[in-house]
Amino acid sequence: MVEYRIDRHSGVATYVQIVQQTKQALRLGMLRPGDKLPTAREVVEATAINPNTVLKAYRELERDGLVEARRGLGTFVRRGLSTAPADSPLRTELDAWAARARAAGLDRDDVAALFTAVLDEHFAGDLAGQEQHSQGDPS
Image 1: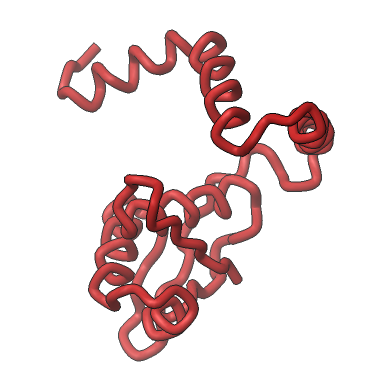
Image 2: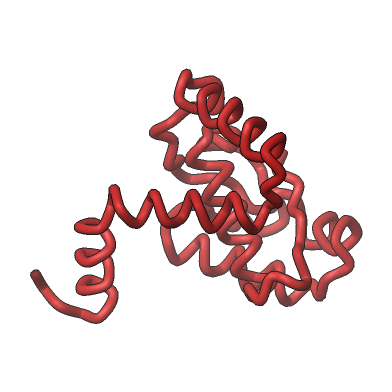
């Protein structure tokens, strides 16, 4: 089961953090089709956020076709996003890189900025396509 961690200082809306963390768990194969998400009550108890925030995140995930709410049973994963399993060699390399970055004195924000800059360089074409798609451009 996924455990949500809310960063109140990130500037990212709480429900978006839940959506992002759920999608990350789906991508890493930590959540699979048929798995049950924590109930809103469980998330509220663990994170001290408003239950409506959890429900908003779950509704967004449902609109994306990733989960489905079953009345009286809970919210379940419909499909995964797993393309890079959590135990892949790439994850091992990235883990070692992150350890070296931390040992070199970089903090989390430094590492995130560096990693994002490298991602932007390697996936620049993908970003342009996503922006056009999100703006309704059919190309």
